[in-house]
Length: 256
Image 1 (cartoon, rainbow, N blue to C red):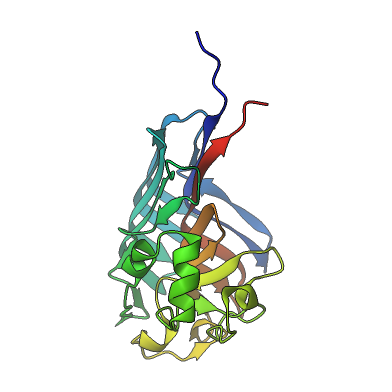
Image 2: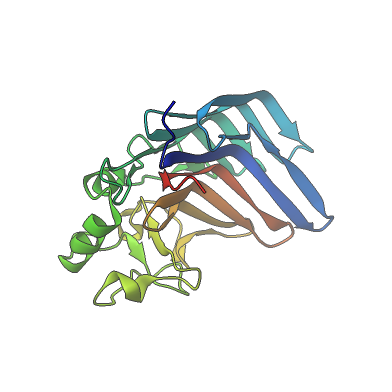
């Protein structure tokens, strides 16, 4: 048998929900429906039904699936029927990332198409979001994103380093890098959110509850990581939680 001079390394992980409460009493919320993929590929899934914790958070059903085959990596997280502290509810969240390797070994094509938030309500009011996931599908490589950014096609979708709320206005993508070397983006432009709540620090602020952040994605040349809904609790209860989180990548590796 001929020795291979390179192999494809798969990478995917996902989880439905998890977080921590820091005040008034410390509480770690167990991560729900968590799955990760072997670097050699394959398939994995995890699910949970009727999850609830201390009257604080509940989920009717959630499933995470990861798979890698044929030089494509895919992760899907689906959450249905969630409630947080009787203040926030949503009908369904789907976090979906696919990563396809370039046959010439160049940049991976990574797309969040299929990622959605449906039926989001806060204090009985609907929150309407404009989903721009398809923009990142059209610009599925890092180089394509760079070109689109320079052309002004990503206005409102690329967030500034050190500031969650302000769209990056640097002249190139390098000016939008975080300290970790990733570009921070969102699938849901802030200026198109329709809600009765103010936008502060990159999310919608709910008095006596906290702040919600939507479709936060970190972008690097070979990888994307995405959290569909992040919650930072404030006031009498403090802590943080995330719904529909995951990441995907994949590229050729030398044998050594």
